[in-house]
Image 1: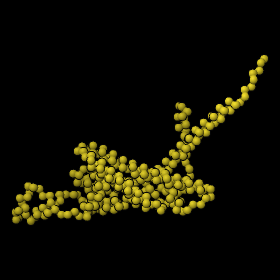
Image 2: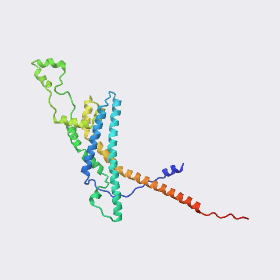
Image 3: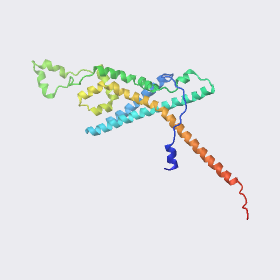
Length: 272
């Protein structure tokens, strides 16, 4: 085992103490709106990707839409980890101020890292999509043939007096109701999952709509989990800094030792 491998094997993570903030602070609304904006951008990209890649093969459809879902959650996870690392760094600075006896405001302390802050930001940022999803989940049903879709072979029966009145309703399409607009919003928001189920699977789509609030909570979970990883990011940063400092000190020590050997006078040899 080489020396470099041994150093990597024996490397210990470095971390600094930090102050813990609160679950909410003066930036909560702003960060929630930012999360909602990122969520909309991700939905638009997902919509374009899913709409432009329609496959008849169920395997290709599953692979494509699964990739879109994973990539979307990864983007949101990274946004959360960035925010979490920044809050941990803020807490480290305030800890140092506290150790030195320097003053700082309560609002500054609240902005430090808190384990639930990321999940709360994600939940508030998703509320505009969660409300329609909850409404749809409790009111959805299997979508059957709607009015205005009478088969062509039955058009001749409409003119018959005995059954014409019963069929006339199917030739008069009704306008979209509120629940239809809600269904459109929710399905666009979870389009990769809709594509995986398939538009012909009526019962599958009904179950998906009932699960839509849970599905729309996944970005919030990804953001909150990413926020928690901010602590690990700061530990890695401190570890790298510590390793670089140790390498620099070893190099300086080697240079000093080499200089000392060069400047040490050699004793003259004694002749017998």
